[in-house]
Image 1 (cartoon, one colour):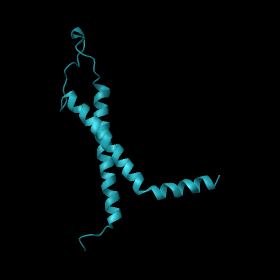
Image 2 (spheres, helix red, strand yellow):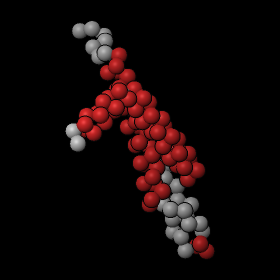
Image 3 (cartoon, one colour):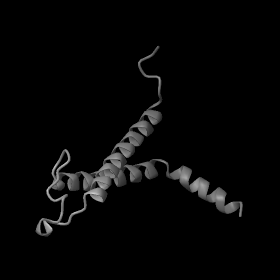
Image 4 (spheres, helix red, strand yellow):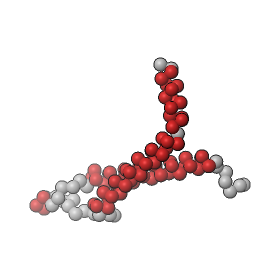
Length: 98
């Protein structure tokens, strides 16, 4: 069996999909963190979730969320650029059938 069984285009698509999935997963997990541990401050001691830290500080979760979202946007833009001819062909076909 050869060391390279996938075409360069298939490998490229695979890496873009891995980047998109990983960045989306990071953004989703950090979004869930913010959903269930909203900021609220000390509130005179009435906030039982004040200063709760799960794995990372809140600032680190914020950075993960921001950069995960940016990486996801970049991966989607690269994906669209690479597949732009397919997108335009499908748009033409869709509008021609109407």
